[in-house]
Length: 464
Image (cartoon, rainbow, N blue to C red; front, side, top):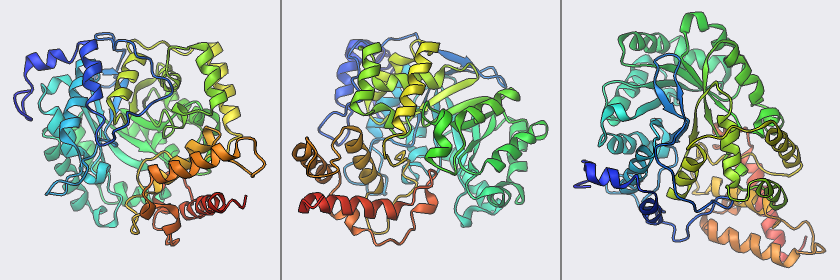
């Protein structure tokens, strides 16, 4: 690159080289010194020119089945003077590599990465020809001070500015279902915001209009019942092989993915998939479950099973992945270049895996960060993710009589201190509960933090 704003053609073409790309990836891990792993990622060459595409029914766009979710961009060690927390150079490298390997759908929001995602995404993408990528963003008017039409439109126009574009390829009403029908009316219907977005689509400044869904199924069903009037071009839903039949069981506010997809298919509406790994849970299976999948495909990552599952239905337009690290991007490109659909036998294996996973006492955290920042500095997602990791890896002793008690105790406590600074651990929670109502998975976060803190203290005192 000649500078941070211009992408030199020669340097862009270098990104396509598989061997060189593997070396590049090692330098993009961000602040972490230890390169993360993802369930046995194969170290094979990353293919170029083999990405699977799906054609958008509404506009005929050829969309890469792998979509880039821009909610988890690499972060700077400390914020920049203007408050920006995103490592722009790392974002540029990731986006350049993704585009060079066929990824062309980028999904962001005004609220992602503490409000800096759109700016970082726009800066990186604007270095490429506009016809090489499709931008999806959302009208994320969650806060009461954005509910008026004036403030919602201000957010919309700011998105165009931050993304450095005069039109949006894909625009979503963000997280409908949270707050039920009252919230839908307040945020989009009664204030005229949806009418405005429909007019923007007619004018061509929005090429495709849809919504993302979390929560109350009444809202989902209502908006689909209005298809003749609204003509939704796509809908974003949570789908993975655990949520296919168990989403409602995991979280009473969620809806099983088989129902969500079937309702879209009835109406010929294409789906964009979020949470194909369920916050990473499906990339870090308990050891004995991972072994069953590795036996079937020893050279492929555990995560690849979930991505293949999510991309198999023909009604799926793209599958989003928040790829913070080059290693994850490379692995997902391998999986979808080209996509090998899940067979009937593999589907049976994954459904069996899902049934067995429901026996584990995991917290359904997807690390979406909606609960953050905590006013008391607690790193809520890191605490919940560490707990889930220890349960999945059999480092969760139930008593001092367990065969692996000593090893598991050390793994839990040492890993806790390494992954969460002491001042940000669960024992600092005061139970203010400002976090729970933001959680799409309906986790009562203070209860879980207190339970984890109590468990950690029992391990320290050896009173299990």
